[in-house]
Each structure stands twice: as C-alpha cells, then as structure tokens.
Amino acid sequence: MTESVSKLQSTGAYQRSTIRDVAAKADVSATTASRALNGTGRMSDETRERVRAAAAALDYRPNSIARGLVQQRSFTLGLLTNDTYGRFTLPVAAGLSAAMADRGVSVFLSAGEYEPESLKLNLGAMEEKRVDGLVITGKRIDRGLPIDLPPLGMPVVYVYASAPEGAVSFVPDDINAAKNAVDHLIGLGRRKIAHITGPRAFKAANLREMGWRSALAGAGLEPFGDAIFSAWTEAHGYDMAHALIEADERPDAIFCGNDQIARGVIDAFAQMGVGVPDDIAIVGFDNWEVFAKATRPPLTTVDMGLPDLGRSAGLALLDMIDGKPVEPGIRETPCTLVVRQSCGAKID
Image (cartoon, rainbow, N blue to C red; front, side):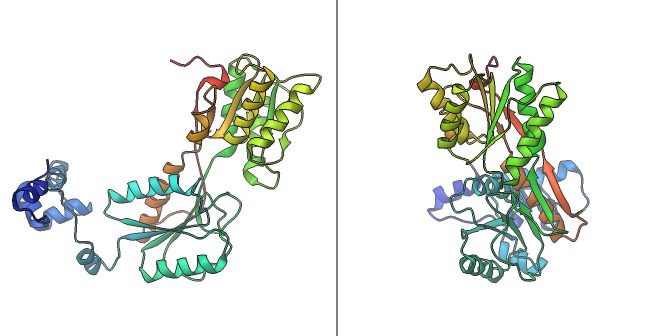
C-alpha cells in the first residue's frame, strides 16, 4: 500500500504527495529529487534509484503545469491516425503510451478516417493543446493521411504510414519477416510452399511476396506457382484454398499474407477434410490474436511488433523535442514468428 493511499484512508481526502515529500523520504534535497526523476543532474545510480523508489512508494505525480511553465513544454504528444477501427493504431498507441508514461508524458489520440476536414480539425486540436510533438500512423505503410500537413512548428514521426522525404519513419521489416516464416516451413520439411496474399496495390503484399521468394531461392526451391493476390479477407483465403486443392498438384504448405486469409484457408480445408498441419501447414501474418488464437488449430503467424514500433517512435520523438540529432529515413524494425500448431512444429 502506498503512503498516499494511507493518507486517503486515514483522512478521507486524497493529499497529493509533493516533491518535498519525495525528497524527505529519500533523504535528499528537493532539487536533487527533481533532477533524479527528470533523468538530469549528476548523482550516483544508488541515489537516483532511491529517489525513484521513494516516488513510487508515495505515488508521486509531478505537477505537469508547473513543470511545463519551467521547461516551456506541455509534456504531451499527439497521435493522429485515419485508422478509426484501431487494428494497427491501438497496439502502436499502447507501446507509445507505456514508454511515455515512464517519462511523465501524456499521449492524445485522435482518429479521423479518410475525411480531410475531420483530420484537419483534429490536427488543429492538437496544436491548440500545444503538444510537444506528433506521431502520425495509419492502416498501411504506403499511404499517409489524406491531408497535406502545414508547417507545424513541432517534430513529427511516422509509424506504419507513408512518410515524406527526409522524415523519420518506423515500419515493420516485411521482407525479412516473410522470409523467416517461409524458412521455418522449410525447416519443418515443407517443400511445395504456396503464397496467398492481399491486393497487389499494397506495398506490404509485394514485400511479403519478395520474402517468400527469397526464402525459397535460398533453399534452392521453386515457388509453388505464382503468388495469389486478391483481398485481405477470409473469403479470399477460403476461395483460394478450394482452387489449390482442386488443382492437379497440391502444396504441402501455404504462407498467407495476413491472418484473415489464413483463417479462411483453414476453414475451407476443415470442410474439405484436408488436415492442418498434417496435410498442409499454414502460416499467417500479423498475429491478430482474436483470429490467430481462436483458429483451429491455433495459427502460427508473424507478429509485427506494433507496440515496439510505437515505443521506438516515441523515444525518437522525445530526442527530437530535446534537440538531439535523429537521422531521417525509414527504420525497418524486426518482426517475430509466433509458433503455434498450424505449421506442424512441436509445441512445448
């Protein structure tokens, strides 16, 4: 139980801890306590940790208004997106918010789909709140927001969205993620590996196809036919599963461009009596857990690490706000293969 909660229970009113309370508990000056919590000043690691422990015990929260007046900052970031469903934005926001909470920074999320006027109003609201910086994210890596950003007078970082030349941007490493997924299937003894994916117009679909081809070439294998492009839907996966089974030769594995396609494939195979993974192994992409874990058998899939993208973007943005040099360009961050039963690997 924190000491602040004890105060609440004993007095019936919440008494907010101050920096002086923290300093007294840690046996340091108020100035030292403030510098320790802000990550500034010269002091021993032991002193800094003692102050942080005292702040945690007291449930101390800094006075953001006072701190902002002193440092001429609002200690808030804006997160602007057109992904109103939140499929990609919410994991990014979770990672960003968690990283910023440790640094006393709040995040304002604003979503506006493809309505330029709505997005402009949301952007105006961010400016009115005087956010220190802005993270822009979306639903695909090759498309930005449907508005031209005016000069904002604040740093901007892009996550899972198209970025202008010279900007700082974070995206998943789709090519290597796909290659690792197919390498895993090859390592399990699969040799006839097909690929079903989304629309050719999506950059992500093309990058994942490149990873599929790269893994096969590296193993001296030919692609099992051409990659099948259509839609990011279960219906597409379902229909293409039927087409593959009705052909003269069947694959022994399918790498799918997303989890919805993989789910449709597995549903079709279940109806046709094709065993997964015994007859055909399946790997998806996205690790959308509502699909992946509920699939029968549970789906092996690529996790894009969206919370890590949000965290990395936030830390880069803080460096930019502090005037530290941040190299412009696209950062492709590693993805992780989450192994479940659909690929045929043994699960401990």
